[in-house]
Image 1 (cartoon, rainbow over the protein chains, first blue to last red):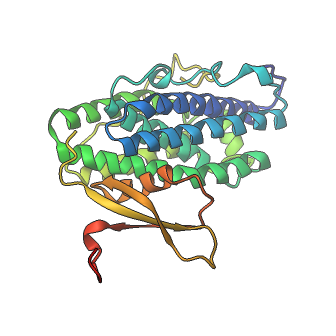
Image 2: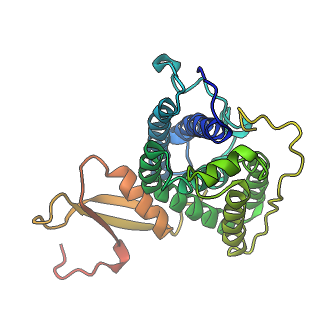
Length: 234
Length: 65
């Protein structure tokens, strides 16, 4: 991927959009790997459908970078990006799948929701299409969380652990709220809200969801940003 | 994970407003929301304009087979 000199807001959006596509590509791979081993045949088919959605979102999001002056080779494919570490490799268990469905998908989709009316028109168009399809992903995640909570025991303990592990990385993806490039992007109408609002929305939703099942999860605000990489967003 | 006590949902769909809903298959899920997700994922081979699911226990026979 090549880049050019741009203002701080555009540089931040290039990083966010490229990383969004990288993570959606990785999420699609991870969902797809469970399409042959989900606990039920119905969820295996749902995993395949969600994989297809995510890979489609990645493919349709990369071209937005060209509108911001970034050239990306068509041959680069969907495996060359820098995804969050928690979804960079095969998910070890079904609890991880549901945690990724809840937390990683949740953070990315909340960012996309803030870009629905973006001044970057191609991003706004993709965002509206992505949000239509993400509704089913959220229903799937919430319903499986409910099912696992009802089962209780080790299944539930592992789900809570995986949610907290995924949060530790996914919460850092939007970056520090003080990022001047992000604040400029908001001021220019490229996105509607910033990193703190993304984390607050996802945290409020997840805590309310799990409390509804009588389960508490710890989703702290990230503290130390000294080693955060604004290009790879991790 | 046990599948005991799961519900069979009959799936109906149509491709055009002038068509009646017709039976396209079933899904087995205990959770109503997961049943909707499953039905949409499994029976996606046609460009449906409407799809509904009905829990089999709610169906009443007017004429027994």
